[in-house]
Amino acid sequence: MDLGLKNKVAVVAAASKGLGRAVALELAREGARIAICSRNREQVRQTAEFLHGETGAEVFFDQADVARGDEVRSFVANTLNRFGDIHILVTNAGGPPAGLFVSLRPQDWMTAFHLNLMSVVQLCSEVIPHMQKNRWGRIINVTSISVKQPIDGLMLSNSIRSAVVGFAKTLSNEMAPYNILVNNVCPGYTRTERVEELSASMAERKGVSRDRIVATWEGSIPLGRLGHPEELAALVAFLASERASYITGTSITVDGGATKSLL
Image (cartoon, rainbow, N blue to C red; front, side, top):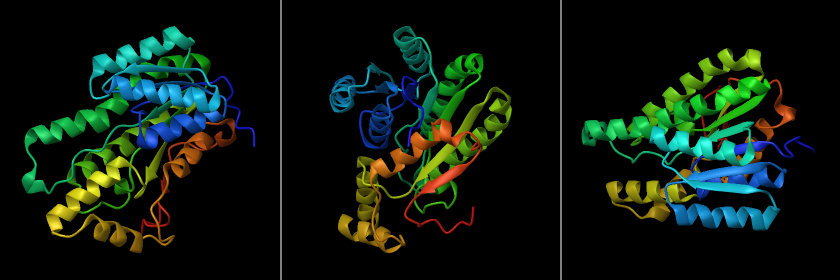
């Protein structure tokens, strides 16, 4: 299937590892030109070299913390200087730390707010004018199944990521006249460093092993296993493509059937 992504310019945030890296790799395989960022310059440089080596795609990398508006603006400006345009935006950021409400400080809330909501808002603010000019664009936000079924112990993620979904739904309506499609992908338990961190945190809190936590998760998933990053990446590539021309304002889970929600 030709997804029509050859020579499209795709910005993938927080892409030095995990889901972001998998998404960048999948888009590069489809022929897109890729711009990636990370707070860690060495990691993002290595990822850029890997992407180019695996696919031959043109890859631009920049050091940027998506929680900082000035660094987001610089990253997008540098991408435009390199490629001249932006067609696809994949917003992504590390999840906030696990924690119960009584353990969280006001600063924890503000950090999560900037990392997981304002990063999306600021990235969209920077790229949308260029998409409007082209009357074509794809915005895909990487969120979590917690926006459909809150996860115990993830107060920050449950709250802030749900705000992203509200923002995206409203934005999809406003951008529809410009043929800019806005969707969310909601990964479940997927084998990434983030899930390793969550399992360690929950294991410590409950006084059990990490293997016990992972086994519990797997037992709640109809497919009986954790997901792989490339399984989420395949959906993102489809949503970024010409083939997804009538899909906007949706939140799609990639969770092996774990979410109990009907929608």
